[in-house]
Length: 186
Image (cartoon, rainbow, N blue to C red):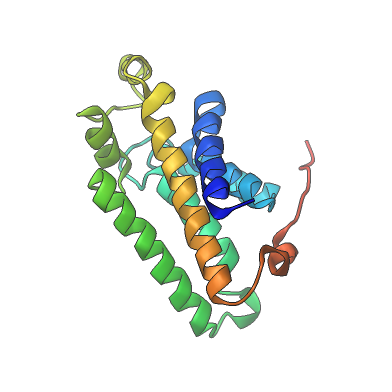
């Protein structure tokens, strides 16, 4: 598959995940994982509380930004066995997430959930308030607004990951060790 097709797939999966399942952070993580065939249920689960600016509070980072950052960190973040070092990966991850940050700022004017909402809706919502949450839905929250943000975040994260893998002279196969598919006990 050509890179443009891969990036289109990432966008489409992110958009559809947010439309159908909700939780911007998990939907971004799932889209990146599924696009790159790098499923890891533990990473997916860990992203749950990051949606809607952390637990739908709106005052934390956008879940698309958080989910994209998690996936970039999964590939290039500091390794536990090099806890006291790993300078190359630390620098790489910070640089890639800064680039993701800059893309959000350029497009939405913010990486904070309420700021992104204000950019795409013209206002922000209190998702803990049932009337405001209902208005969020009526205004297209899961029809075309946050769905497009998640699609874009997924596209950007995949693009940054693929670019760095290529810069390192590697392929996705070199990252097969990141796969850990597991079902959680009930």
